[in-house]
Amino acid sequence: MPNKKDNAKEPDLEAMAASGVHLGTLRTHSNPKMKPYIWGNKNTLLLIDLEKSKENLEKAISFLIDIKKKDGLILFVGTGIAAKEVTKKVAEDLDMPHVVERWLGGTLTNFSTISRQVNQLKELERQKAAGEFGKYTKYEIQKLEEKIVKLKKEFGGLLKLNRLPNVLWVSSAYYDKIAVDEAIKKNIPIVGIVNTGSDPTLLTCPIPANDTALTSVTFILELVEEALINVKSAPAETAASNKESNGKD
Image (cartoon, rainbow, N blue to C red; front, top):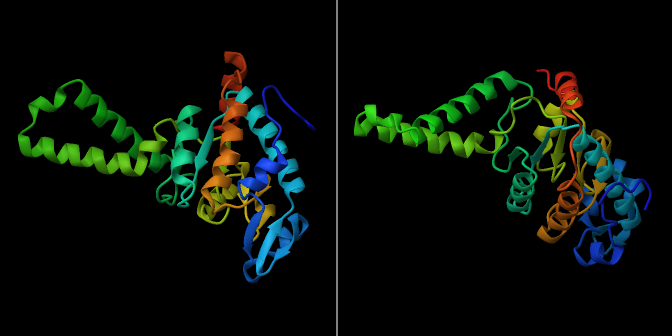
């Protein structure tokens, strides 16, 4: 396996095929820039070249390993139906922030505003846990708890996003295209899944693959998790330097 690192597992072509990684979009929905990654077609459906998928997946995992070694922050985004649960699970297992519901405009480009909302959620949860809600009336407590529920739905996955991420993961370049646009504006590297209907050149490390099938997205994300889960971060001084140089708004 080229550029194999640490415990990164080599993707198996047969397993990739069984998971439907090779199934692209309809030919009528294809993006011309995906042509290098297309093997052929079956009736009206485009077929992705699994050798290219494997090669790019290995490169993407290698890139993410380097980021994690430097104590980098990876923001996992997966708002497509097939991606929500597995994206959230992998992000939480890796102790990383995530967005699996609606992407809030300005999450990256207006980070200071988003941070204020996240900090408000943290403070309300702290107050509740400390029993400080006891000083309020029942009506006020009800309103505060409703506020917590609302904030958790919108910002709960961002509690660990205490600075701009070092890299953005997207489980679909199509469904998560607003996040991709914001990352580009902030010069944040992007890694993720690109189906035949999207532009792979927008991503730093595009992984040509099916982004609508649960089996395909799960297969790829589980390999990513397996490769990253035991990666050790750099010494504290190196990590601090990395945060300072990559986490500025």
